[in-house]
Amino acid sequence: MQQRTLAQFQVSAVGLGCMGLSHAYGQQDESASLATLDRALDLGVNFFDTAEVYGPLRNEILLGKALKAKRDQVVIATKFGFTYRQERTDFGEITGTDGSPENARAVAEASLRRLQTDVIDLYYLHRVDPAVPIEDTVGAMARLVEQGKVRAIGLSEVSAETLRRAHATHPIAALQSEYSLWTRDVESNGVLDACRELGVAFVPFSPLGRGFLTGKLAPVAELSEGDFRRSLPRFQPEHAQVNRELVRVIEDMAAAKGVTAAQIALAWVLAQGEDIIPIPGAKRIPHLEQNVAAVDVRLDAADRARLDETFAPENVSGSRYPAALAAMAQK
Ligand SMILES: NC(=O)c1ccc[n+]([C@@H]2O[C@H](COP(=O)([O-])OP(=O)(O)OC[C@H]3O[C@@H](n4cnc5c(N)ncnc54)[C@H](OP(=O)(O)O)[C@@H]3O)[C@@H](O)[C@H]2O)c1
Image (cartoon, rainbow, N blue to C red; front, side, top):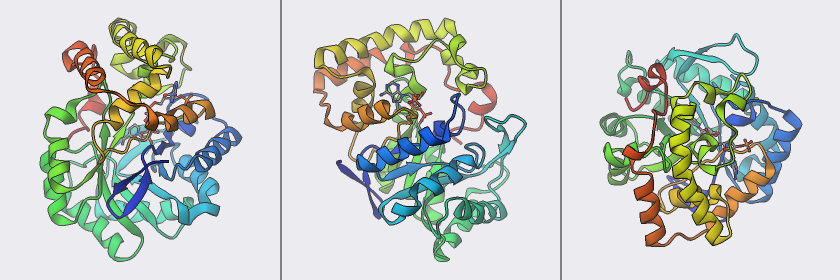
């Protein structure tokens, strides 16, 4: 497995986003999840992404169990900063943000226990809390680094300006935001440029467009009742039918190269720079295997230009989040 550099860590060029194993995307099965995590380790994946809110809590517990025996060989990233209410059994409803120093400390302690470890490699603020200056949140996270409870600090879905303020408080190792063929905001809003200027690694989440860019995702009406994608504008039929036409270009390119559409979508993300470390999510082992193999898929300049043009932001229909969640992003 090719490696990429994320601050002091050498991580697999493709990490594993673990959210779907316990949260948001329908059916979950612990023994299947453990098998997927084992297979990821076998394939040389060493970068695992979780969060307090995934499950909530269950995803960290799962990772603790799966990774304990290989703890010194893996880089575990987790996140805090959402508040949530758990009325459903399959995932918690997000109610707001809490970036207070107290919450940064309390969640870190609880995450350490759930992950069965004595240090969190990468601790992200999941969303900026508008009621707490970023300097205060990052200051508390920096204290956790001093105490040896956290190795490196990350942020998620912040603006370039917030990243700069945070980085002036304590070096930021990684910024995680949505980035894929159909979500290109970080190219134009200064975020990717700021990461490069400051030497911050960029971790694209949902690099497969939450499955849509693979061409294999069932229509939204067929997703299970609790599937989070049912609430996302882009997946609704009026938008999905426009976006599905764009995905055909990925499928044609994949067919010509003898690879899958998922691999083309991921190869495009990987080709954006050595500082980019995507974390595709996969519950199914064949999906995981395909995604790992995407590191060997080459796109030439003409391929990339075709994809860039096809997925120009004005060609993508529908927003990525409903209004309440959009209001929390890119702060
Ligand atoms: N910071 C944040 O706010 C934030 C937000 C969202 C996600 N994330 C992180 O980013 C990770 C990845 O994002 P994501 O899971 O939302 O979306 P994603 O990686 O873009 O897509 C995951 C979906 O694609 C399917 N899939 C994966 N590989 C495939 C393949 N080769 N062929 C066909 N289908 C395939 C998966 O199916 P199966 O699961 O059935 O295999 C799943 O439904 C998450 O797990 C989480 O750790 C962070």
